[in-house]
Length: 631
Image (cartoon, rainbow, N blue to C red):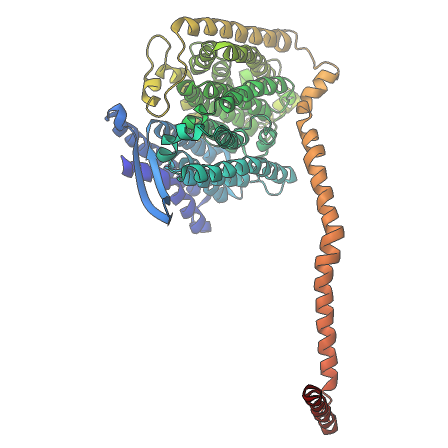
Protein backbone atom coordinates (compact mmCIF):
# COMPACT_ATOMS: atom_id res chain seq x y z
CA UNK A 1 0.00 0.00 0.00
CA UNK A 2 2.75 2.46 0.94
CA UNK A 3 4.70 1.63 -2.22
CA UNK A 4 1.57 2.25 -4.30
CA UNK A 5 1.09 5.63 -2.62
CA UNK A 6 4.66 6.69 -3.44
CA UNK A 7 4.22 5.54 -7.06
CA UNK A 8 0.99 7.51 -7.25
CA UNK A 9 2.82 10.62 -6.04
CA UNK A 10 5.88 10.52 -8.28
CA UNK A 11 4.53 9.06 -11.55
CA UNK A 12 3.25 12.45 -12.82
CA UNK A 13 6.49 14.18 -11.75
CA UNK A 14 8.50 11.60 -13.69
CA UNK A 15 6.37 12.32 -16.76
CA UNK A 16 6.86 16.07 -16.41
CA UNK A 17 10.62 15.59 -16.17
CA UNK A 18 10.72 13.14 -19.09
CA UNK A 19 8.72 15.43 -21.40
CA UNK A 20 10.91 18.40 -20.48
CA UNK A 21 14.20 16.55 -20.95
CA UNK A 22 13.14 14.84 -24.17
CA UNK A 23 12.27 18.15 -25.81
CA UNK A 24 11.80 17.94 -29.57
CA UNK A 25 12.90 14.31 -29.58
CA UNK A 26 9.41 13.50 -28.29
CA UNK A 27 6.56 14.16 -30.70
CA UNK A 28 3.82 16.55 -29.66
CA UNK A 29 1.14 13.82 -29.45
CA UNK A 30 3.72 11.64 -27.71
CA UNK A 31 3.97 14.18 -24.90
CA UNK A 32 0.22 13.88 -24.41
CA UNK A 33 0.40 10.09 -24.32
CA UNK A 34 3.22 10.15 -21.76
CA UNK A 35 1.36 12.60 -19.50
CA UNK A 36 -1.92 10.67 -19.78
CA UNK A 37 -0.22 7.34 -19.11
CA UNK A 38 1.55 8.71 -16.04
CA UNK A 39 -1.63 10.10 -14.48
CA UNK A 40 -3.44 6.90 -15.41
CA UNK A 41 -0.71 4.88 -13.69
CA UNK A 42 -1.08 7.11 -10.65
CA UNK A 43 -4.82 6.35 -10.65
CA UNK A 44 -4.13 2.61 -10.73
CA UNK A 45 -1.71 3.02 -7.81
CA UNK A 46 -4.37 5.01 -5.93
CA UNK A 47 -6.84 2.17 -6.51
CA UNK A 48 -4.32 -0.28 -5.04
CA UNK A 49 -3.87 1.93 -1.97
CA UNK A 50 -7.66 2.24 -1.64
CA UNK A 51 -8.16 -1.53 -1.84
CA UNK A 52 -5.43 -2.11 0.76
CA UNK A 53 -7.02 0.44 3.06
CA UNK A 54 -10.43 -1.23 2.77
CA UNK A 55 -8.84 -4.47 3.97
CA UNK A 56 -7.86 -2.86 7.27
CA UNK A 57 -9.92 -2.18 10.37
CA UNK A 58 -10.99 1.40 10.95
CA UNK A 59 -8.33 2.13 13.58
CA UNK A 60 -5.58 0.85 11.28
CA UNK A 61 -6.52 3.03 8.31
CA UNK A 62 -3.88 5.61 9.11
CA UNK A 63 -0.49 4.70 7.66
CA UNK A 64 2.47 7.07 7.42
CA UNK A 65 5.75 6.57 5.60
CA UNK A 66 8.92 8.67 5.86
CA UNK A 67 11.39 8.57 2.97
CA UNK A 68 13.90 11.12 4.19
CA UNK A 69 14.58 13.39 7.16
CA UNK A 70 15.81 16.67 5.75
CA UNK A 71 16.62 18.46 8.99
CA UNK A 72 16.36 17.88 12.73
CA UNK A 73 16.37 20.78 15.17
CA UNK A 74 15.82 19.70 18.75
CA UNK A 75 12.47 17.91 18.85
CA UNK A 76 11.49 19.33 15.46
CA UNK A 77 11.98 17.10 12.41
CA UNK A 78 11.49 18.21 8.82
CA UNK A 79 10.64 15.03 6.91
CA UNK A 80 9.61 13.94 3.45
CA UNK A 81 6.69 11.80 4.54
CA UNK A 82 3.25 10.82 3.30
CA UNK A 83 0.05 9.94 5.12
CA UNK A 84 -2.20 7.28 3.62
CA UNK A 85 -5.61 7.49 5.25
CA UNK A 86 -9.21 7.57 3.97
CA UNK A 87 -9.17 11.32 3.33
CA UNK A 88 -5.91 11.32 1.37
CA UNK A 89 -6.86 8.21 -0.61
CA UNK A 90 -10.22 9.73 -1.60
CA UNK A 91 -8.43 12.82 -2.86
CA UNK A 92 -5.83 10.69 -4.66
CA UNK A 93 -8.61 8.89 -6.52
CA UNK A 94 -10.33 12.15 -7.49
CA UNK A 95 -7.16 13.96 -8.55
CA UNK A 96 -5.77 11.09 -10.62
CA UNK A 97 -9.05 9.67 -11.94
CA UNK A 98 -10.59 12.92 -13.14
CA UNK A 99 -7.11 14.27 -13.92
CA UNK A 100 -6.34 11.36 -16.26
CA UNK A 101 -9.58 11.99 -18.18
CA UNK A 102 -8.81 15.70 -18.51
CA UNK A 103 -5.21 15.13 -19.63
CA UNK A 104 -6.40 12.53 -22.13
CA UNK A 105 -9.02 14.96 -23.47
CA UNK A 106 -6.24 17.50 -23.95
CA UNK A 107 -4.59 15.28 -26.58
CA UNK A 108 -7.45 16.12 -28.92
CA UNK A 109 -8.07 19.65 -27.72
CA UNK A 110 -4.44 20.81 -27.95
CA UNK A 111 -3.71 19.05 -31.25
CA UNK A 112 -1.77 21.42 -33.49
CA UNK A 113 -0.63 23.79 -30.73
CA UNK A 114 2.99 24.89 -31.08
CA UNK A 115 3.80 24.45 -27.39
CA UNK A 116 2.00 21.14 -26.88
CA UNK A 117 4.97 19.54 -25.08
CA UNK A 118 5.26 22.40 -22.62
CA UNK A 119 1.52 22.18 -21.95
CA UNK A 120 1.60 18.48 -21.05
CA UNK A 121 4.70 18.91 -18.89
CA UNK A 122 2.86 21.62 -16.94
CA UNK A 123 -0.28 19.46 -16.64
CA UNK A 124 1.71 16.55 -15.21
CA UNK A 125 3.47 18.92 -12.81
CA UNK A 126 0.09 20.29 -11.72
CA UNK A 127 -1.21 16.80 -10.90
CA UNK A 128 1.98 15.99 -8.97
CA UNK A 129 1.68 19.23 -6.99
CA UNK A 130 -1.88 18.45 -5.95
CA UNK A 131 -0.94 14.90 -4.99
CA UNK A 132 1.93 16.21 -2.88
CA UNK A 133 -0.54 18.49 -1.12
CA UNK A 134 -3.11 15.79 -0.33
CA UNK A 135 -0.64 13.01 0.50
CA UNK A 136 1.58 15.15 2.73
CA UNK A 137 2.34 13.66 6.13
CA UNK A 138 3.10 16.99 7.79
CA UNK A 139 2.46 20.69 7.42
CA UNK A 140 5.84 21.37 5.80
CA UNK A 141 5.10 19.04 2.88
CA UNK A 142 1.59 20.44 2.73
CA UNK A 143 3.07 23.91 2.34
CA UNK A 144 5.41 22.69 -0.41
CA UNK A 145 2.50 21.19 -2.33
CA UNK A 146 0.44 24.29 -1.65
CA UNK A 147 3.08 26.51 -3.23
CA UNK A 148 3.66 24.19 -6.20
CA UNK A 149 -0.07 24.16 -6.95
CA UNK A 150 0.03 27.95 -7.10
CA UNK A 151 3.09 27.89 -9.36
CA UNK A 152 1.56 25.29 -11.67
CA UNK A 153 -1.66 27.27 -11.99
CA UNK A 154 0.38 30.37 -12.83
CA UNK A 155 2.19 28.51 -15.61
CA UNK A 156 -1.00 27.05 -17.08
CA UNK A 157 -3.26 30.09 -16.80
CA UNK A 158 -0.57 32.10 -18.58
CA UNK A 159 0.14 29.32 -21.08
CA UNK A 160 -0.70 31.55 -24.06
CA UNK A 161 2.23 33.88 -23.45
CA UNK A 162 1.46 35.94 -26.54
CA UNK A 163 -1.81 37.17 -24.99
CA UNK A 164 -1.44 40.03 -22.47
CA UNK A 165 -4.79 39.10 -20.89
CA UNK A 166 -3.51 35.60 -20.11
CA UNK A 167 -0.32 36.93 -18.52
CA UNK A 168 -2.33 39.42 -16.45
CA UNK A 169 -4.71 36.66 -15.30
CA UNK A 170 -1.79 34.42 -14.29
CA UNK A 171 -0.22 37.23 -12.27
CA UNK A 172 -3.53 38.01 -10.61
CA UNK A 173 -4.08 34.40 -9.59
CA UNK A 174 -0.55 34.14 -8.24
CA UNK A 175 -0.73 37.39 -6.24
CA UNK A 176 -4.19 36.73 -4.80
CA UNK A 177 -3.07 33.29 -3.68
CA UNK A 178 0.11 34.77 -2.22
CA UNK A 179 -2.02 36.62 0.34
CA UNK A 180 -3.48 33.31 1.48
CA UNK A 181 -0.06 31.68 1.43
CA UNK A 182 1.26 34.40 3.73
CA UNK A 183 -1.48 33.87 6.32
CA UNK A 184 -0.88 30.14 6.17
CA UNK A 185 2.86 30.53 6.75
CA UNK A 186 2.18 32.74 9.77
CA UNK A 187 -0.21 30.10 11.12
CA UNK A 188 2.47 27.42 10.77
CA UNK A 189 5.03 29.59 12.58
CA UNK A 190 2.58 29.92 15.47
CA UNK A 191 1.90 26.20 15.34
CA UNK A 192 5.60 25.35 15.62
CA UNK A 193 6.01 27.81 18.48
CA UNK A 194 3.05 26.43 20.42
CA UNK A 195 3.09 22.71 19.57
CA UNK A 196 6.77 22.21 18.77
CA UNK A 197 6.00 20.04 15.75
CA UNK A 198 4.65 20.20 12.22
CA UNK A 199 3.56 16.56 12.18
CA UNK A 200 -0.19 16.12 11.80
CA UNK A 201 -0.54 13.55 14.55
CA UNK A 202 1.56 15.45 17.07
CA UNK A 203 -0.21 18.73 16.33
CA UNK A 204 -3.75 17.37 16.49
CA UNK A 205 -2.97 15.50 19.72
CA UNK A 206 -2.22 18.88 21.32
CA UNK A 207 -5.35 20.60 20.00
CA UNK A 208 -7.05 20.68 23.39
CA UNK A 209 -3.93 22.15 25.02
CA UNK A 210 -3.75 24.81 22.31
CA UNK A 211 -7.37 25.68 23.04
CA UNK A 212 -6.35 26.82 26.53
CA UNK A 213 -4.66 29.79 24.86
CA UNK A 214 -7.71 30.95 22.94
CA UNK A 215 -6.29 33.84 20.96
CA UNK A 216 -3.37 31.77 19.64
CA UNK A 217 -5.50 28.89 18.38
CA UNK A 218 -7.90 31.39 16.82
CA UNK A 219 -5.00 33.04 14.99
CA UNK A 220 -3.74 29.66 13.80
CA UNK A 221 -7.18 28.67 12.52
CA UNK A 222 -7.68 32.10 10.94
CA UNK A 223 -4.34 31.83 9.12
CA UNK A 224 -5.25 28.39 7.80
CA UNK A 225 -8.65 29.69 6.74
CA UNK A 226 -6.95 32.53 4.86
CA UNK A 227 -4.99 30.01 2.84
CA UNK A 228 -8.10 27.93 2.16
CA UNK A 229 -10.16 30.96 1.13
CA UNK A 230 -7.53 32.14 -1.37
CA UNK A 231 -6.91 28.74 -2.94
CA UNK A 232 -10.63 27.94 -3.24
CA UNK A 233 -11.60 31.43 -4.48
CA UNK A 234 -13.98 32.26 -1.64
CA UNK A 235 -14.82 35.70 -0.30
CA UNK A 236 -12.94 37.99 -0.09
CA UNK A 237 -10.11 36.52 -2.23
CA UNK A 238 -12.29 35.24 -5.05
CA UNK A 239 -11.52 37.69 -7.85
CA UNK A 240 -8.79 35.63 -9.54
CA UNK A 241 -10.94 32.64 -10.52
CA UNK A 242 -13.01 34.10 -13.40
CA UNK A 243 -9.89 35.62 -14.98
CA UNK A 244 -8.23 32.19 -14.81
CA UNK A 245 -10.47 31.23 -17.75
CA UNK A 246 -7.76 32.76 -19.95
CA UNK A 247 -5.99 29.41 -19.82
CA UNK A 248 -6.88 26.57 -22.23
CA UNK A 249 -10.19 24.84 -21.42
CA UNK A 250 -8.57 21.62 -20.07
CA UNK A 251 -6.66 23.80 -17.60
CA UNK A 252 -9.94 25.31 -16.42
CA UNK A 253 -11.36 21.82 -15.98
CA UNK A 254 -8.34 20.63 -14.01
CA UNK A 255 -8.28 23.69 -11.74
CA UNK A 256 -12.01 23.58 -11.03
CA UNK A 257 -12.69 19.86 -10.86
CA UNK A 258 -9.66 17.98 -9.62
CA UNK A 259 -6.98 20.25 -8.24
CA UNK A 260 -6.55 23.80 -7.09
CA UNK A 261 -9.91 25.06 -5.88
CA UNK A 262 -10.63 21.85 -3.99
CA UNK A 263 -7.44 22.30 -1.95
CA UNK A 264 -9.10 24.74 0.45
CA UNK A 265 -11.90 22.30 1.25
CA UNK A 266 -9.35 19.53 1.81
CA UNK A 267 -7.41 21.79 4.19
CA UNK A 268 -10.51 22.52 6.28
CA UNK A 269 -11.22 18.81 6.65
CA UNK A 270 -7.60 17.77 7.19
CA UNK A 271 -7.12 20.36 9.97
CA UNK A 272 -10.57 19.82 11.49
CA UNK A 273 -9.15 19.17 15.01
CA UNK A 274 -7.69 22.70 15.03
CA UNK A 275 -10.86 24.34 13.73
CA UNK A 276 -12.99 22.46 16.24
CA UNK A 277 -11.12 24.12 19.14
CA UNK A 278 -11.61 27.48 17.40
CA UNK A 279 -15.39 27.30 16.81
CA UNK A 280 -15.79 30.95 15.89
CA UNK A 281 -13.33 30.59 13.03
CA UNK A 282 -15.05 27.39 11.92
CA UNK A 283 -18.37 29.24 11.91
CA UNK A 284 -16.70 31.99 9.89
CA UNK A 285 -15.65 29.41 7.28
CA UNK A 286 -19.26 28.27 6.94
CA UNK A 287 -20.49 31.86 6.73
CA UNK A 288 -17.97 32.77 4.03
CA UNK A 289 -19.08 29.73 2.05
CA UNK A 290 -22.74 30.76 2.28
CA UNK A 291 -21.96 34.34 1.26
CA UNK A 292 -19.80 33.19 -1.65
CA UNK A 293 -22.38 30.78 -3.05
CA UNK A 294 -24.94 33.60 -3.17
CA UNK A 295 -22.57 36.20 -4.63
CA UNK A 296 -21.25 33.83 -7.31
CA UNK A 297 -24.75 32.66 -8.21
CA UNK A 298 -25.92 36.23 -8.75
CA UNK A 299 -22.92 37.20 -10.87
CA UNK A 300 -23.33 34.08 -13.03
CA UNK A 301 -26.77 35.34 -14.10
CA UNK A 302 -25.26 38.06 -16.32
CA UNK A 303 -22.14 36.37 -17.67
CA UNK A 304 -21.86 36.00 -21.44
CA UNK A 305 -18.67 33.91 -21.61
CA UNK A 306 -19.53 30.20 -21.47
CA UNK A 307 -16.46 29.36 -19.39
CA UNK A 308 -17.07 32.19 -16.94
CA UNK A 309 -20.61 30.99 -16.27
CA UNK A 310 -19.18 27.60 -15.34
CA UNK A 311 -16.39 29.26 -13.35
CA UNK A 312 -18.86 31.16 -11.18
CA UNK A 313 -20.79 27.94 -10.66
CA UNK A 314 -17.57 26.44 -9.28
CA UNK A 315 -17.16 29.32 -6.87
CA UNK A 316 -20.75 28.80 -5.74
CA UNK A 317 -20.43 25.02 -5.33
CA UNK A 318 -17.19 25.35 -3.39
CA UNK A 319 -19.20 27.68 -1.14
CA UNK A 320 -21.51 24.75 -0.36
CA UNK A 321 -18.48 22.63 0.53
CA UNK A 322 -17.14 25.36 2.84
CA UNK A 323 -20.57 25.57 4.43
CA UNK A 324 -20.59 21.83 5.09
CA UNK A 325 -17.01 21.67 6.38
CA UNK A 326 -17.57 24.75 8.54
CA UNK A 327 -20.56 23.11 10.19
CA UNK A 328 -18.61 19.91 10.84
CA UNK A 329 -20.32 17.84 8.12
CA UNK A 330 -16.95 16.75 6.78
CA UNK A 331 -18.03 13.63 4.91
CA UNK A 332 -20.88 15.50 3.22
CA UNK A 333 -18.53 18.28 2.15
CA UNK A 334 -16.11 15.74 0.68
CA UNK A 335 -19.00 13.88 -0.94
CA UNK A 336 -20.00 17.04 -2.78
CA UNK A 337 -16.35 17.66 -3.68
CA UNK A 338 -16.26 14.25 -5.35
CA UNK A 339 -19.51 14.54 -7.32
CA UNK A 340 -18.69 18.14 -8.23
CA UNK A 341 -15.44 16.93 -9.79
CA UNK A 342 -17.46 14.66 -12.09
CA UNK A 343 -20.08 17.08 -13.34
CA UNK A 344 -17.85 20.15 -13.37
CA UNK A 345 -15.20 18.42 -15.47
CA UNK A 346 -18.04 17.25 -17.71
CA UNK A 347 -19.36 20.79 -18.19
CA UNK A 348 -15.95 22.30 -18.89
CA UNK A 349 -14.93 19.60 -21.35
CA UNK A 350 -18.30 19.74 -23.12
CA UNK A 351 -17.87 23.52 -23.32
CA UNK A 352 -14.43 22.86 -24.77
CA UNK A 353 -16.02 20.82 -27.58
CA UNK A 354 -18.31 23.76 -28.37
CA UNK A 355 -15.42 26.24 -28.28
CA UNK A 356 -13.28 23.91 -30.39
CA UNK A 357 -16.03 23.57 -33.01
CA UNK A 358 -16.62 27.32 -33.14
CA UNK A 359 -12.91 28.11 -33.54
CA UNK A 360 -12.35 29.63 -30.11
CA UNK A 361 -15.65 31.49 -29.72
CA UNK A 362 -16.78 31.67 -26.06
CA UNK A 363 -19.54 34.31 -26.20
CA UNK A 364 -22.88 32.54 -25.68
CA UNK A 365 -24.66 35.39 -27.49
CA UNK A 366 -22.98 34.24 -30.71
CA UNK A 367 -24.19 30.67 -30.26
CA UNK A 368 -27.59 29.00 -30.49
CA UNK A 369 -29.24 26.07 -32.19
CA UNK A 370 -26.47 23.65 -31.25
CA UNK A 371 -28.85 20.99 -29.96
CA UNK A 372 -29.54 19.69 -33.48
CA UNK A 373 -26.02 20.26 -34.74
CA UNK A 374 -24.17 18.79 -31.73
CA UNK A 375 -26.64 16.36 -30.10
CA UNK A 376 -24.10 14.39 -28.06
CA UNK A 377 -22.55 17.55 -26.65
CA UNK A 378 -26.04 18.84 -25.83
CA UNK A 379 -26.81 15.61 -23.95
CA UNK A 380 -23.55 15.89 -22.01
CA UNK A 381 -24.36 19.50 -21.13
CA UNK A 382 -27.87 18.52 -20.06
CA UNK A 383 -26.55 15.79 -17.74
CA UNK A 384 -23.93 18.12 -16.27
CA UNK A 385 -26.45 20.94 -15.88
CA UNK A 386 -29.01 18.74 -14.13
CA UNK A 387 -26.32 17.41 -11.77
CA UNK A 388 -25.14 20.96 -11.05
CA UNK A 389 -28.72 22.06 -10.36
CA UNK A 390 -29.15 19.17 -7.92
CA UNK A 391 -31.85 17.29 -9.81
CA UNK A 392 -32.57 13.66 -8.87
CA UNK A 393 -31.30 11.07 -9.49
CA UNK A 394 -28.03 12.66 -10.62
CA UNK A 395 -24.98 12.85 -8.38
CA UNK A 396 -25.29 16.52 -7.41
CA UNK A 397 -28.71 15.89 -5.90
CA UNK A 398 -27.42 13.48 -3.28
CA UNK A 399 -24.29 15.40 -2.33
CA UNK A 400 -25.54 19.00 -2.23
CA UNK A 401 -28.71 18.12 -0.38
CA UNK A 402 -26.71 16.25 2.27
CA UNK A 403 -24.98 19.56 3.07
CA UNK A 404 -28.32 21.39 3.28
CA UNK A 405 -29.66 18.72 5.63
CA UNK A 406 -26.59 19.15 7.83
CA UNK A 407 -27.29 22.88 7.97
CA UNK A 408 -30.87 22.19 9.08
CA UNK A 409 -29.53 19.98 11.87
CA UNK A 410 -27.02 22.61 13.08
CA UNK A 411 -29.21 24.92 15.13
CA UNK A 412 -30.11 28.53 14.49
CA UNK A 413 -26.87 29.52 12.79
CA UNK A 414 -27.02 26.50 10.51
CA UNK A 415 -30.61 27.26 9.60
CA UNK A 416 -29.65 30.82 8.59
CA UNK A 417 -27.00 29.35 6.32
CA UNK A 418 -29.58 26.85 5.05
CA UNK A 419 -31.67 29.76 3.77
CA UNK A 420 -28.67 30.98 1.76
CA UNK A 421 -28.12 27.48 0.40
CA UNK A 422 -31.74 27.19 -0.71
CA UNK A 423 -31.62 30.54 -2.49
CA UNK A 424 -28.43 29.29 -4.11
CA UNK A 425 -30.32 26.22 -5.36
CA UNK A 426 -32.78 28.49 -7.21
CA UNK A 427 -29.96 30.59 -8.66
CA UNK A 428 -28.07 27.49 -9.78
CA UNK A 429 -31.02 26.18 -11.76
CA UNK A 430 -31.56 29.62 -13.30
CA UNK A 431 -28.03 30.48 -14.44
CA UNK A 432 -27.19 26.92 -15.54
CA UNK A 433 -30.19 26.53 -17.81
CA UNK A 434 -29.98 30.12 -19.01
CA UNK A 435 -26.62 29.06 -20.46
CA UNK A 436 -27.98 25.79 -21.87
CA UNK A 437 -31.05 27.36 -23.51
CA UNK A 438 -29.02 30.17 -25.08
CA UNK A 439 -26.24 27.92 -26.38
CA UNK A 440 -28.30 24.94 -27.56
CA UNK A 441 -31.80 26.35 -28.10
CA UNK A 442 -33.30 28.51 -30.82
CA UNK A 443 -31.94 28.92 -34.32
CA UNK A 444 -28.22 28.75 -35.14
CA UNK A 445 -26.50 32.11 -35.20
CA UNK A 446 -24.54 33.32 -38.20
CA UNK A 447 -21.29 32.37 -36.46
CA UNK A 448 -22.58 28.84 -35.81
CA UNK A 449 -23.77 28.41 -39.40
CA UNK A 450 -20.43 29.59 -40.72
CA UNK A 451 -18.33 27.14 -38.74
CA UNK A 452 -20.61 24.12 -38.43
CA UNK A 453 -22.41 24.16 -41.79
CA UNK A 454 -19.80 25.55 -44.14
CA UNK A 455 -16.78 23.85 -42.60
CA UNK A 456 -18.63 20.71 -41.55
CA UNK A 457 -17.08 20.62 -38.08
CA UNK A 458 -18.15 17.71 -35.88
CA UNK A 459 -18.21 17.16 -32.14
CA UNK A 460 -14.53 16.57 -31.71
CA UNK A 461 -12.02 13.71 -32.02
CA UNK A 462 -12.22 10.45 -30.12
CA UNK A 463 -10.07 11.60 -27.19
CA UNK A 464 -12.47 14.46 -26.49
CA UNK A 465 -15.82 12.70 -26.91
CA UNK A 466 -14.76 9.51 -25.08
CA UNK A 467 -13.66 11.34 -21.93
CA UNK A 468 -16.86 13.41 -21.93
CA UNK A 469 -18.90 10.20 -22.17
CA UNK A 470 -17.10 8.66 -19.17
CA UNK A 471 -17.65 11.81 -17.11
CA UNK A 472 -21.34 11.86 -18.08
CA UNK A 473 -21.73 8.34 -16.69
CA UNK A 474 -19.95 9.35 -13.47
CA UNK A 475 -22.17 12.44 -13.14
CA UNK A 476 -25.21 10.15 -13.30
CA UNK A 477 -24.13 7.32 -10.99
CA UNK A 478 -21.56 9.05 -8.76
CA UNK A 479 -24.11 9.97 -6.11
CA UNK A 480 -24.84 6.32 -5.44
CA UNK A 481 -21.93 6.01 -3.02
CA UNK A 482 -24.05 7.67 -0.33
CA UNK A 483 -27.85 7.74 -0.10
CA UNK A 484 -29.49 9.16 3.02
CA UNK A 485 -31.43 6.57 4.95
CA UNK A 486 -30.25 3.76 2.67
CA UNK A 487 -26.50 3.46 2.97
CA UNK A 488 -23.52 5.69 3.68
CA UNK A 489 -20.24 3.85 2.95
CA UNK A 490 -18.38 7.08 2.11
CA UNK A 491 -19.21 8.65 5.48
CA UNK A 492 -18.19 5.46 7.27
CA UNK A 493 -14.95 5.32 5.29
CA UNK A 494 -14.02 8.93 6.12
CA UNK A 495 -15.01 8.73 9.78
CA UNK A 496 -11.52 7.78 10.95
CA UNK A 497 -10.06 10.86 9.22
CA UNK A 498 -12.66 13.37 10.38
CA UNK A 499 -15.39 12.54 12.87
CA UNK A 500 -18.50 14.55 11.92
CA UNK A 501 -19.92 17.09 14.36
CA UNK A 502 -23.42 16.91 12.90
CA UNK A 503 -25.41 14.05 11.38
CA UNK A 504 -28.86 14.93 10.01
CA UNK A 505 -31.79 12.58 10.31
CA UNK A 506 -33.52 11.00 7.32
CA UNK A 507 -36.51 13.31 7.88
CA UNK A 508 -34.30 16.39 7.77
CA UNK A 509 -32.68 15.15 4.58
CA UNK A 510 -36.06 14.55 2.94
CA UNK A 511 -37.30 18.03 3.91
CA UNK A 512 -34.28 19.88 2.56
CA UNK A 513 -34.16 17.71 -0.56
CA UNK A 514 -37.79 18.45 -1.41
CA UNK A 515 -37.38 22.20 -0.94
CA UNK A 516 -34.06 22.36 -2.81
CA UNK A 517 -35.39 20.36 -5.78
CA UNK A 518 -38.51 22.52 -5.94
CA UNK A 519 -36.43 25.70 -5.93
CA UNK A 520 -34.03 24.27 -8.50
CA UNK A 521 -36.96 23.38 -10.76
CA UNK A 522 -38.34 26.88 -10.28
CA UNK A 523 -35.02 28.32 -11.45
CA UNK A 524 -35.03 26.02 -14.49
CA UNK A 525 -38.63 27.02 -15.26
CA UNK A 526 -37.78 30.73 -15.13
CA UNK A 527 -34.81 30.13 -17.44
CA UNK A 528 -37.00 28.12 -19.83
CA UNK A 529 -39.70 30.79 -19.99
CA UNK A 530 -37.22 33.64 -20.34
CA UNK A 531 -34.64 32.19 -22.71
CA UNK A 532 -36.41 29.32 -24.52
CA UNK A 533 -40.04 30.42 -24.89
CA UNK A 534 -39.93 34.22 -24.94
CA UNK A 535 -36.22 34.50 -25.81
CA UNK A 536 -36.18 37.83 -24.05
CA UNK A 537 -33.23 40.05 -24.91
CA UNK A 538 -31.12 41.40 -22.03
CA UNK A 539 -32.85 44.26 -20.19
CA UNK A 540 -31.66 47.82 -20.39
CA UNK A 541 -28.63 48.62 -18.27
CA UNK A 542 -29.59 49.28 -14.67
CA UNK A 543 -27.72 49.84 -11.44
CA UNK A 544 -28.43 46.27 -10.32
CA UNK A 545 -27.33 44.71 -13.61
CA UNK A 546 -24.24 46.89 -13.77
CA UNK A 547 -23.35 45.85 -10.22
CA UNK A 548 -23.54 42.20 -11.23
CA UNK A 549 -21.60 42.77 -14.45
CA UNK A 550 -18.90 44.57 -12.44
CA UNK A 551 -18.85 41.62 -10.00
CA UNK A 552 -19.95 43.77 -7.06
CA UNK A 553 -16.99 46.08 -7.74
CA UNK A 554 -14.48 43.91 -5.89
CA UNK A 555 -11.81 44.50 -8.53
CA UNK A 556 -12.37 48.25 -8.44
CA UNK A 557 -12.29 48.27 -4.63
CA UNK A 558 -9.04 46.30 -4.49
CA UNK A 559 -7.59 48.54 -7.16
CA UNK A 560 -8.48 51.63 -5.11
CA UNK A 561 -7.50 50.26 -1.69
CA UNK A 562 -4.39 48.24 -2.53
CA UNK A 563 -3.08 48.54 -6.07
CA UNK A 564 -3.05 52.32 -6.46
CA UNK A 565 -1.59 53.01 -2.98
CA UNK A 566 1.07 50.36 -3.66
CA UNK A 567 1.96 52.01 -6.98
CA UNK A 568 2.07 55.46 -5.34
CA UNK A 569 4.26 54.13 -2.53
CA UNK A 570 6.59 52.46 -5.04
CA UNK A 571 6.90 55.67 -7.05
CA UNK A 572 7.53 57.74 -3.91
CA UNK A 573 10.19 55.27 -2.80
CA UNK A 574 11.82 55.48 -6.22
CA UNK A 575 11.69 59.28 -6.45
CA UNK A 576 12.66 60.17 -2.87
CA UNK A 577 14.78 57.29 -1.57
CA UNK A 578 15.96 54.90 -4.26
CA UNK A 579 17.17 57.40 -6.88
CA UNK A 580 18.64 60.18 -4.68
CA UNK A 581 19.99 58.09 -1.81
CA UNK A 582 20.74 54.60 -3.08
CA UNK A 583 21.44 55.25 -6.76
CA UNK A 584 22.89 58.69 -5.93
CA UNK A 585 25.35 57.33 -3.37
CA UNK A 586 26.38 54.54 -5.74
CA UNK A 587 26.84 57.02 -8.59
CA UNK A 588 28.79 59.39 -6.30
CA UNK A 589 31.02 56.60 -5.05
CA UNK A 590 31.75 55.43 -8.58
CA UNK A 591 32.42 59.02 -9.74
CA UNK A 592 34.77 59.61 -6.79
CA UNK A 593 36.60 56.38 -7.49
CA UNK A 594 36.98 57.31 -11.15
CA UNK A 595 38.28 60.79 -10.15
CA UNK A 596 40.76 59.34 -7.69
CA UNK A 597 41.98 56.86 -10.27
CA UNK A 598 42.30 59.64 -12.85
CA UNK A 599 44.29 61.77 -10.37
CA UNK A 600 46.63 58.93 -9.50
CA UNK A 601 47.12 58.08 -13.16
CA UNK A 602 48.07 61.73 -13.86
CA UNK A 603 51.03 61.36 -11.51
CA UNK A 604 52.42 58.51 -13.61
CA UNK A 605 54.32 60.76 -16.07
CA UNK A 606 57.25 58.45 -16.78
CA UNK A 607 59.87 61.17 -15.94
CA UNK A 608 62.56 60.37 -13.33
CA UNK A 609 62.46 63.89 -11.89
CA UNK A 610 58.76 63.45 -11.02
CA UNK A 611 59.39 60.27 -9.09
CA UNK A 612 62.43 61.83 -7.32
CA UNK A 613 60.30 64.78 -6.29
CA UNK A 614 57.62 62.41 -4.95
CA UNK A 615 60.21 60.48 -2.94
CA UNK A 616 61.64 63.69 -1.51
CA UNK A 617 58.19 64.90 -0.59
CA UNK A 618 57.40 61.61 1.12
CA UNK A 619 60.64 61.74 3.12
CA UNK A 620 59.89 65.32 4.16
CA UNK A 621 56.42 64.34 5.39
CA UNK A 622 57.79 61.39 7.36
CA UNK A 623 60.45 63.60 8.91
CA UNK A 624 57.87 66.18 9.88
CA UNK A 625 55.71 63.50 11.50
CA UNK A 626 58.73 62.09 13.37
CA UNK A 627 59.73 65.50 14.70
CA UNK A 628 56.16 66.26 15.75
CA UNK A 629 55.87 63.00 17.67
CA UNK A 630 59.21 63.46 19.47
CA UNK A 631 58.30 67.00 20.43
